[in-house]
Image (cartoon, rainbow, N blue to C red; front, side, top):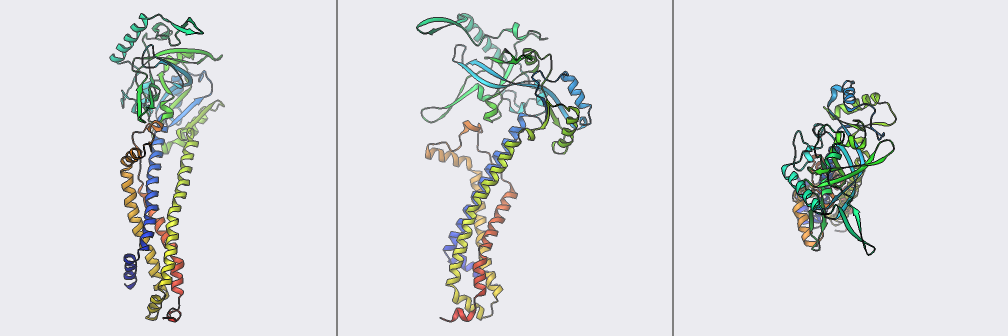
Length: 482
C-alpha cells in the first residue's frame, strides 16, 4: 500500500513529472493522428484504385484485341473451373488517345489533352463494380448509359446552330496576313459516327471530372472551379486503329462525368460506348480486356487467377488482380507508413529519456528517504517497484491524455485545417491534388492500443535503471552523512 501512496504523492508534488507526462502525451497524440490520417488516405486510395478496375483483369498487348469475339470469351471464362466463383464479366477496350474540345463555348480556346480512352458496356461495367458509384448525374444507377439528357441535346442543338451561322473555315491572322484554317474540332457528324453501326444516333462520352472542369487559384488565393465541358458539348478523340497504327478519330457528346476524387484518374479517363470504339478502330467487334468480379474476392482470387492463366497460356495475355496491377503503389504506401511510424515513435523515445533523467535525479535527491525505508524493513524489490510503478503511472497518465487529445484532433482535423489555412494564408490540404472534399481519417482501435502499449513499455523500461540503482542502495551508506 505504501508503494501506491508514494507514487501518487510523487505524481502530485513533482512538477518535473508534468514534463514527462506532456512528452508521452504529445508522442501518443501525434502517433494516433498520423496513423488515423495515413490509414484514411490508404483506405480511400485503395477504394479508388480498386474502383478503377474490377477484381481480376485479363488483358492482351495486341492492339487488335483477342482473336475471339467478346461473347465467346465470356462464355469460355464462365465454362472454366473458375466460372462458379465469378459473379460478373464484361469486355472492354482500352487505348491511349488525344482529346480536343473548345473550352466552354463553340468558339472557345482549343484545348488538347492526352487521355486513356476506354470502351465499355456501361451496364456490364457497373455490374463488375467501380463505375456507376463515381458518376455525377447517374450516381449509383444500376444500369447507367451514354444516353444524352434533353438539356444536353438542347445545348448540342444550340451549339450546332451557332456553328452553322459562322464560317466553317476559321479565319486566322498569321505573319501579317489572313489565312483560312480548318477547325481541328469538327462538329459531330452522325453519318460518320454511325458508319457500320446498327443504330443511327449521336454517341455520348463520359470524361473524367477534372478533364471537364478547370481548377486554378485566383489572384486572391482562392481555389476556383470553372466548367470547360458541359453535357452536350462535343469532343473529338483521336487514337490509333488497325495493325498499321493509322490515326482514327471520332466525335462524341458529353453525357456525364466520372468523379473518383483521384486526380490521376479524373484527369485522364474517358469512357465511350464499346461498340463505337470498336468500329472507329476497325477491331471487328473484338475486345482487348475482360473485367471480372468475384463472388468472394479474398477467398477466390488465387484460384481464379490460376485457372484463368491455364485458360489463356499466351505470352501477350496477362491475368492480374487489382492488387497485382497496383502493387508498387500499395507497397510504397505501406513502406511510407511504417517509416513514418518509426520516426514519430522517436518522440516517445524522447519522453523515455526525460523519465530516465528525472528519475535519476529523484533517486539522488531521495537517498535519505530510501535509506530510512530500507532501515524500517522495505525490501530492495519493494523500493524498485516504487520507481517502476512511478514510471508506469507517468506512462499511463500520459497515454490517457495523449489518446484523448489525439482522438479529438482526429475528429476535428478538417476544422483545424480550415483554421490553419486562414491563419497562415496557405492551404494545408490542397484539394486540387486529391479532389477529396475532406481529409480522410480512419481510427483503428488496434493501432491505438498498440501505440498506448508501446508508450507505457517505453516509460517502464526507461525507469528500470534508476529503480535498480535505488534498490541496490545500502541503508547505512544512505544515512552515513545524515
